Image (cartoon, rainbow, N blue to C red):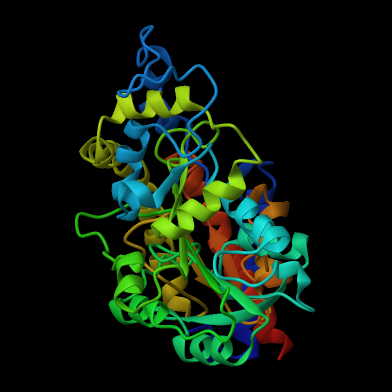
Length: 424
């Protein structure tokens, strides 16, 4: 354990680590682990969708010509395909374009400008609008709030999800809190899946703001890495049981199932919410890309088709996660300088090092040719109060590239930790 080393031992260790680091730096590597992108071989799994799926037939099962205008909420086949991902009924879903992030941004923008179902005024008519942001969390959720001027309140993660005592107290006392961001399954970046108790407590929230919404971004609902995947309760069903059917808005997409640049995204919510959102969306668009919806429906056929497809993804990326976790267990665990969660799914490994080391680790990696997500990005306003969390994204590099990148990462983490200990 590094904390047990004497100053002389730390100085000697620093020399050894610096020499190892400089040898990697001299190789002029260019390795990218900055975002959770599917690798090219993952994208190739869906390539037939672009080449053979339609075969000159552009009509949906109810006779709609998918080349033309119309059908705002999605063709029947696309709805049937996407519904099981969120566990909703036919009148509880809208199938949109390729990006769930865009649907989330638009939903918040409409809430600001027009209000939400049951609200007495648009959110922008309030003196302030606040959002709860469990962290470490998804940087783009936080970027949406910051870009629109919504004040963010950080909520810490516990082992089974956000700190619900804090969530319950805050929403019950402050009418300016209009929503909360959630990534409930294989959370970005922690890999944590919400426990049944956490989901039920969300469903039973008693917010002071009558127009409060839970933004339930179930991005990784089928992105399993093991044969014993996590399971979470259906938040909409739990909200119905609690008498709060309109409190949750759910989102997911096929961005990491088919093509990030050309997948399907959807909103799931109560039928009343869906009708209300439809009535607002009609001024935005006449309809999303129905040809893409038809391609997806014909390629996957049904939810079983998606499940089988995700087994192919797992075969590609599970070995990459193993490389990351094996390296951390071998190189970092004996040093006692960090902790991490072993995720059963998702796209990230969340690394929490010693206080004051995250920025230094990221910079050391960058200088040695390994690009990581910026330190602090997993917190609102990019400010990690402990400067300790780093999001590792293993999916895009090849296994060989990833092995080298993790060697550099581990040396950088050790060196940054030794520097901190010597400075004390």
